[in-house]
Length: 143
Image 1 (cartoon, rainbow, N blue to C red):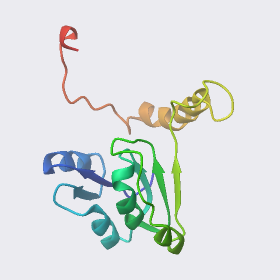
Image 2: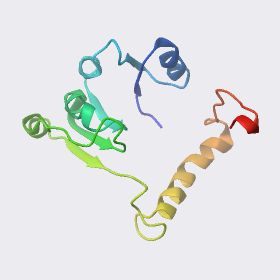
Image 3: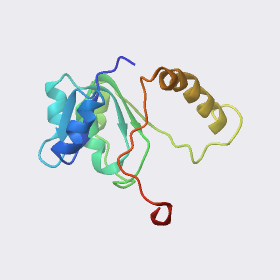
């Protein structure tokens, strides 16, 4: 879709797999400061974050001026200090969203989101540009 993609993972094997899928900036978060790496690349325009509180300050540092942080998970906690000075200076936006709290139908509901996702992704699946990735298979008894 034209985005320049940066990813974080905990080892080279996973990062190389991400490169195969088109990621350009590979960051091993166990040995590299992802905010510093992103700063070297001009900062991120958008960060999609599943960790939450633990990465809030680093995400703010990693964003480019005018960047957006979208928090979709809380694996790293729910409470953190927000560096408001940096938020203002860089004109950043921070938002959170989840499917769980949304109604099934109606404006902004799950059905609307699914329909929009199918409308954008199904042509890519039909054309073969997007394909499922199977890492492993298991017998049903082990699933």
